[in-house]
Image (cartoon, rainbow, N blue to C red; front, top):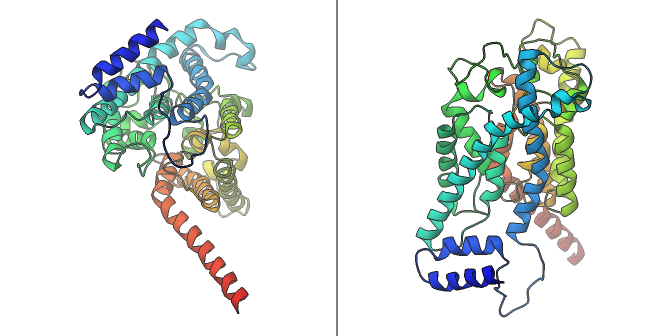
Length: 404
C-alpha cells in the first residue's frame, strides 16, 4: 500500500505538467486505472487494451524461449554437426550454452525494439498530450522474432523509429494504422539492407553472407529449407524437424508446434480470429495443391528453376518459412485486418494464396508472407466495403420482395 500511495502522490504532483502522460502510462502499467464511465449505458467488460496485448505476448513467450535454444543449437550444429534422432531427447539441444548464445543475441534485439519504440511513443504522447498507447507492446515483441539474429542493433533502431513514426503515429497512433507495424519495420529493413535480410546465412549466428560480421565463422552455411528448395536442392531436414522447429530461420518462425499452441491460446481467449487463421491455411493449401498438380501434369520439369518449390508437398509449405507465424500473429492484427466476418474469410484466404504464390515465383526472396499480409492490409478496407455493400443490396432486395 505504501508504494501504491507514493505513486498516487506522484501522479497528483505531475498532474498538468509535461510529464503527466508518461507517468500515467507507468502508473496504469503497474495498477488498474481508477477511472469509471459517467453517463449513458456501457457494456461492462474486464478486458482492456493492456490485457489484450499481454495475452498476445503470453502466446509468443514459448516461441521466444525456444528460439533462444534453437539459435545456439543451430550455431553449434553447423560447426560440429547435428545429433542423431530427435533433438528434444538430446542434451545437445537443451544445453545451457545454447540458451546463453541465443539470449546474448536476442535479448539486445528485444531491448532495442522496446526501448526505441516505447521511447518514441512516450515522446508523441507528451507532445500531443494524450495517453500513452499500449499498441507497441505486441509490436515490440514481434520485431525481434522476425529479423535475422545477427542484425546490427543500429539498423533495428532506425527501422523501429521509421515503423513507429511513419507506419503508425502519422496515421493517428494505435488503432489507426493501415499496415501492420511489425511488418512495416521488417519491410523497411528488407528494402534498405537486403544483404542483412535475405539469403541463407543470415539466419544462423556467426555466418557470413556477402558482408563482414563480427565473430564470423566461415564454416557455417546455414542453408534454410526455402533456400534449398529455391536452388532445387533436396532439403536435409525431416518433417519432424520442420514441425518442432529444429531448423534455421528467424527466431520466431521455426517451431510450427509452438505457433499452433499460441494460435489455440489466442482463439480460446477470443483475441485471435479463427476465421482468418483457418481461411489463410486453406488458401495456402489450395495454392500448394495447384502447384503440385502442375508438376504432376508434367508442365514443369526438374530443369525449371521453380521445380523445387512447386513440387514440394503442399502441406509441408505450412511447416517452413514464416507463413505459420505470420498467419497466427500478424495476419490477425485486429487493426489492419478485415473487420467483417465474411471479409476475414476472404482476407485470410488471399493471404495464404499469395504467400505461397510469392514464395514460389520470387527466387530472389523465397518467402511471401510479409508481402502478402502487407498487400492485404491495404485492401482490407476495400474487402469490407464490398462485403457491407453486398449485405445492403441483399437486404434491399428482400425489402422490395416483401413490399411488392
